[in-house]
Length: 263
Image 1 (tube, rainbow, N blue to C red):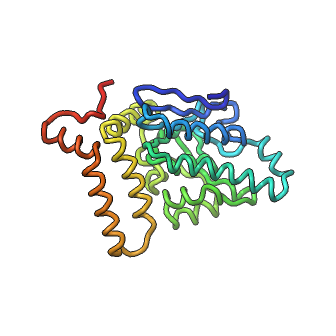
Image 2: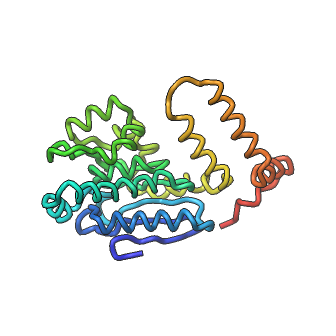
Image 3: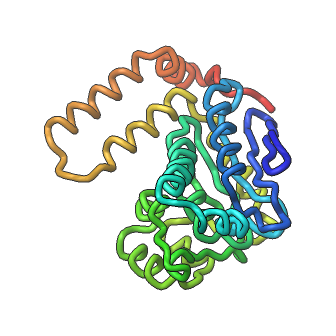
């Protein structure tokens, strides 16, 4: 993809790796743009079943690059707005990717790095991973990443960590729901592999529709007749789809469905 980002495809999985280890994978406008392009390309690639987001070197992502921050300090409002919108678009593209996404978290995940973790469907962290929403200590706000972080951690925990900027470890991130699983550092890839094994057994169109379903029903509010009717419509549509029919038929015939490929 580029020097600061690599994309490797193995066994129907795309491994997207932030490749700026010398700055602990801190991102700037170039990396943000490259991430957006990579996610858009993977969205269209029907050979890819899942996406793993990782960081090279000793960190997952330490947030914003220092030199980028220096440049932003000289920007006016319109330039800052355009810059923020680019970051927001990248996070939205990751969040709305129709394929399952996993964050492989090790070392520091700070500020915008926490946003990347939160925007993925599933996050698996090494026991030594650490997190911090550091923006407040710079007199800033984690506004762009807030929709994903508040959704992942909840409002109460977000109030604490947004306002204090204190660091917290992998066990706390797991307790809050930011991490789905915590493993020993040497078992991180095995943990990722185990989840990928399950993900690649599922129907790709079903997973796409499930992600859309979760977005629809998680908006809050009462369970109205309209919500009930919408959920019934969704399951009826997927049952009569080619993939739905193949899944049911393979179950009844005691065979693997057509989308499951032997690696």
